Amino acid sequence: MKKFPFYVMALLASSFFAACADKPTEAPQSDELLPDSLIKNVQTVPVKLEDENGIIKLNGKVQANEAHQAKVFALVSGKVQSLKVELGDFVHKGQVLALLNSIEVAGIANDLANAEANVILAEKTLATTKSLYEGNLATEQDYLGAKVNYNKSVADLQKAKQIASISGGNQSQYLIKAPISGYVIEKNITNNSAIRPDNNADLFVIADLSDVWIMANVYEADMNSVHLGDEVKVSTLANPEKSYTGKIDKIYNVLDASTRTMKVRISMNNANNEFKPEMFAKVRVDRKVTQKALTIPAQAMVMDNGKNYVVVKKNNKLSVQAIQVRSRFEDKAYVTGLALGDEVVTSSQLFLYQALTNN
Image (cartoon, rainbow, N blue to C red):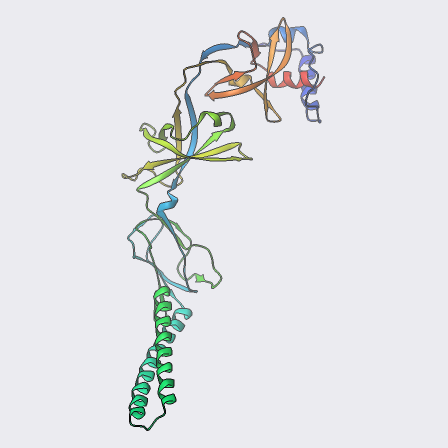
């Protein structure tokens, strides 16, 4: 590797640190301060015209299908007496997940017993009053009052039964049951933990994993190249040699400001249970591309304020050129904004860019 003189490295370093200061959007470009020996010896690669690669590689993660999962909450407060399942267990619909001791359930059971007793008493009172009324020993108002009281006690009993049915409790115990069949993918309680009345967090999440989602990230440069219905190949770190076929069935048209990516969804059949939630996945999108495009090494690009630039060498002079990235595949970028045969710098291009735009 060629070694540059000390004064050259000093000049490049000073240019780099000067870049930390605010600079105008359109800074003047000049290589007059750069030594001719440096300009002469920079490494360059010519811009080529090639068939545009139709492959886009995305990184993704396995998630449970939200339409086939259920979050389990406790409808009453209480203390966990026992847990019947652990994380990762398969459960059937209606299976008991946990048992709570609950004062609320005890109160509901007591209300139900009182309602049943009131109905029995009101029924007997109505029968007695009716008999007295028919024998002219009670007034019509007494009979109607007994009938109203009986109807009210029946309505109160129905309400108490409905509340008891909703709570699912028995005496002072409350059973937390699985609403669907599937795997326990979240468990947020332990033995002897307390469930407060104001608790709004789910205790379990049950998911049917017979089909899952692959949520993949699409970089900003590739957004226009990914479409609904595109066929993809999916592989996982657990089984990298095996490829699974799927299609993009949803595009989330929102850009994440921190990662500069957009999410797409691929629904995958998981009958063999090979996909696990939170598992990393690699997604390959094969596009049908029949056109040619200008290509440069991806390493030649310099990103500044969300835009891409390259340093171009022409007639032993260096200049900065703005480019637009059509797509990117591994170490190659398909771009516009350059001409066929242009020489782009591939060594120390960041330092050169800073030196050229901060003179």
